[in-house]
Image (cartoon, rainbow, N blue to C red; front, top):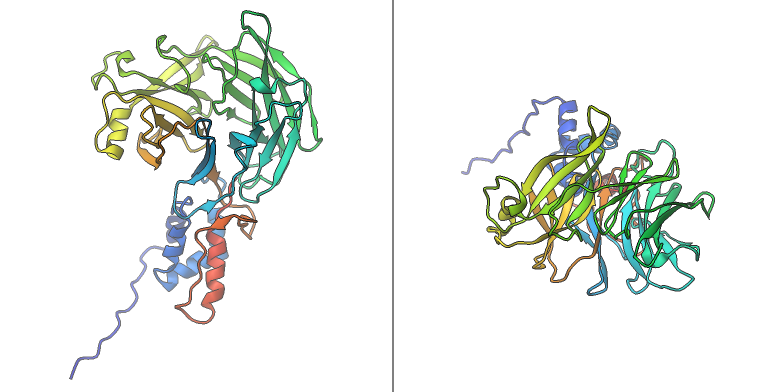
Length: 429
């Protein structure tokens, strides 16, 4: 007679519940399925995750935003697309590329420029996770064919965790030829969603055309724009003033088009990443052809002046070797995007091998997209847990890839499955 099989007792949990909750709260928010899988480990873990107290850990404003995906646009193939960087993420029906081209994304909103060069040109503000769209007409006196725009949240005291439904500002900069020698006057103006009007135009000179590299927000009101010669335009939204900043030293033989990008420095101030050929680095001991990323920040000296200070060099030969197995020694790289708050730059190559992310802190690289054409504009979409007790899923034709319900447990598990699905979904801030 066979010995009856006895089920083993459930494992004990030597860790206190509050420590276990802290561990579960550190699961990567960019992959919501982690919490779903954790809730299936055992009843004890499931009860902890269902507990309303656990939600407050997820809502901690100190949690760094995570990158869920990115929008990219190409003039070569006229393609606008959203690419999730993790499998369990939302997909979005993007605006029609025949009418709009991408400028950037920030604080839960993407902004697009009209492809029309007529007097009726306009900007489109689009909230990906609700589908809301708002067209903003551009005044005819603005030189829209030589312009760039970005969007920022205008809510007072907002932590930018779930601010896509609040007021916003559009900062619009444009260039106008000053004389026949191609000297330009650069002007800027701010649109307020609360008043529905454009404000006063401010101008400066001695700067060339603003390029479509992503703008950088430092603090609450300092916006930085990159020109096609490497100079930087600082627009103080609070004071409605403009100043120009000279670029850091770079290889004079290397064109700056997509070889420099504005980034947040370690202290949260203005920084840049410049792609340099290896032979330009002093004392370089690596291969002679593979490019490297140089990180610099603008800092105040003891005398009160400001200067560019170099911090580190990331050799792409080392970072990309883990992705490719081996890195071509003649690789030419371009920087095409930066995820504000996530310390991550997007890199493409002249050989069109795809799009890679490089973490500026860990120096780790990851391939996030494969394409055979050049990407002209790229805007990362970051995630945050919403500040409300009910989390909002995308509306309309948006699709959630992590819809889930349980049918293997007791009768009340259908309600539990619905609850865990809502508690694990993410909104973007």
